[in-house]
Image (cartoon, rainbow, N blue to C red; front, side, top):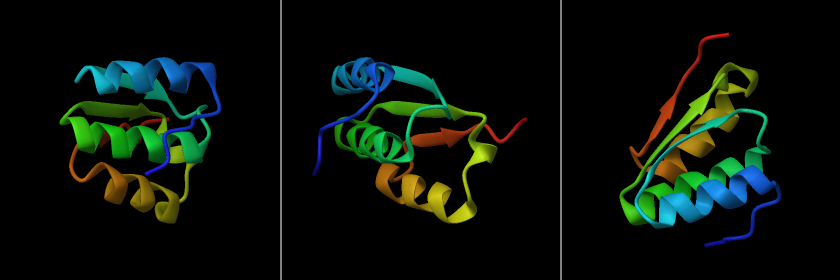
Amino acid sequence: MAHDVESPTARTALALLRASGRVIVDSTIPHADLVVLAQTAAQWGAALTIRHAHVYSDEQLSIIAAAGRGNVTFDLTS
């Protein structure tokens, strides 16, 4: 599993998820970073919420959801 993330916010979120924290991030984080965060949330039993997730396609959201294995909440409000 890849653990490299691009954005500084994603790096902070990754550290918090590894400590089993509950993290809320905005959809401005790159999709690839969100996939890594979702994988990490699943691995550590942490919770990840993605605000304004409506900006991503159904396919992209499904990829994140599958990576998170039930540990990701999507805020689809605009």
